[in-house]
Image 1 (cartoon, one colour):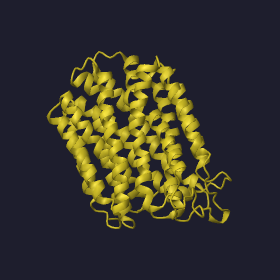
Image 2 (cartoon, one colour):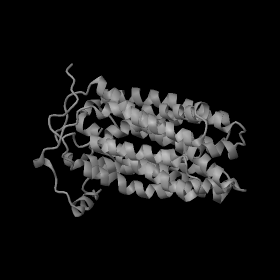
Image 3 (tube, helix red, strand yellow):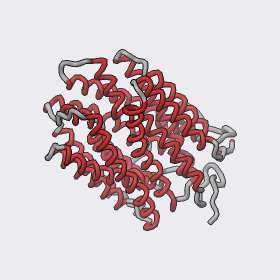
Image 4 (cartoon, one colour):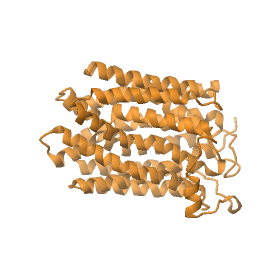
Length: 419
């Protein structure tokens, strides 16, 4: 079977399958991204905040982490669609997406290095916001390459190589910063270097340049106007977006406060080691689900039912933790959550590429979709922190996680144009 790495034109619908080399470079980039983004969220950032605060009440540390994450989410809302829209209009000879992937990687990496040296809460927050913006710039452009270059019948499998590296990235990142690299600053620096090294192979791949005649007019007014997509005119885009928001918030509630849950909810004296165990279980199931179920979705030509079941599994996992807060139950929940989230990440991404309103604005539209994934990862810790503050326990955190996940399942059931 013939394989190529580019579509015939920048705005054309790709019909040929991308090569294994393209997929390997794509997956490697995401491995670096997830290591650099999720390792701080899971361990380095909350530990750094707790070390600076030395609070008398552990809830204060949870709240500080939640507030910093919540503020970062405001920048995500702007950075994703804005940089996606700019990449849609970029006419560089290097293509539309590669320049922005490179810019985002550099901003992300340098911000992580700076973050490791911060000793005040406000500077920790500022550095994390800068890193988050770099993450948005990079991933907005990288995600758009799926619609630019990957045929519809291959998108479930290729999207699986976005989600599978997430699981591997978490566990590898945690092992690096807990077992191999001493100190917070060194941990951030290593993650930054790994990010840059892993993105280089994809930057060497061809990216079809945008012809001048295909370029939309660039103005602040036109870009701002393009950020609104009417859910009445494009209902399937709206339902897919809502589903992703709800499921992502549910997942964030179930995972972002996990270290605090082990430390203070279960009184686990080996919280960091047990966090790695739970993450390893989660990783295995995410990898299995994202790669096998993403490909099965391609073969069956069905997306909606996979996303529905995946969201439901995450709701069940959250309910287990709410009802039976125990480490053994947490291991079972980690497996269910990984199975559901791995399937959701790969198939929902493929679904999203099939409900986009306009091929000329793929980067911007997928940037809006990416908001639905990234902002909940920042809002989730804040909602969870308020739930802990209100109740003094983690039960409400997981109940809310289940409600959001089940709501996401109902939302995706309303999509009509994609089976």
